[in-house]
Picture 1 (cartoon, helix red, strand yellow):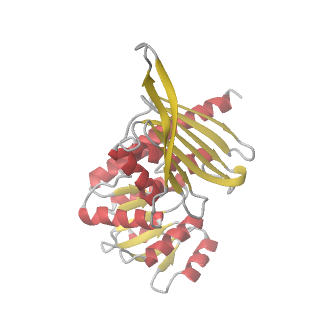
Picture 2 (cartoon, rainbow, N blue to C red):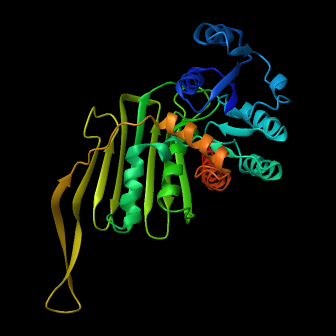
Picture 3 (tube, helix red, strand yellow):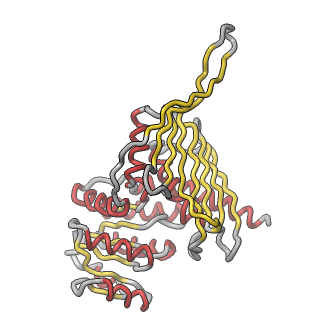
Length: 331
């Protein structure tokens, strides 16, 4: 699949490397408006890859099937709309857009031009999260009770989005996937901007019909933490991405409700059973996401992180962003 990439910052360079290593893609060109990044791309790319400041020149090339968009979120909307208008399939970095309205316009354009729109919600292509999804779908975890997430680090500070839009978006997408697209009954968020104008620390709370979610996102932590707890009525899972091995543990633990002799009364007994550490082979989530996108194009099938899922994620994020903005207005 011949593709053009727009954006060659830190993450864009990572994407380009994956494209070059994959047998599924031919990277035709890398485009970036920043001269320093153009120089960086020329050093890293082979002579067969064109480095340019202008992506428009490739829109009319019928041999190019897709655009890989890795620019700042504010710019990605226009690029994606132009690419899909030229009947190019689009792989776009998260979040898919800055607003629900823009997301709806992207989705409408994808439907109008009959092209694949895939948002890079990485956790859906992570082998550990796929394992958790199987536990949920099989009923082994029981009914969801709560999901608790910590995504903490010291920087990097982004200027285009806050910590919530940078970090929590992945976990909102994962919860949407785990719950098969359920809509939360309430969305609340609090945040704090320690430097600059964007919130460097946020807490996002989602309340669903039968479970709750808490996502803590921070750029101002002295230590890096990447931990997720998924608790069900039968079993619970802890995923700790900072561990070198045994990243995922399944706990046969919970609270059992036992009837007492008086049928109107119950005893609540804690249960601590075995801990299972599954053997999960390493897979590169970004490589999986890119090659899944290619597979969707080849087979003309919608992505699991495509228009519908991305819209649900953006609807939650927009409510959270509005909550943060209202708090800022109120002082």
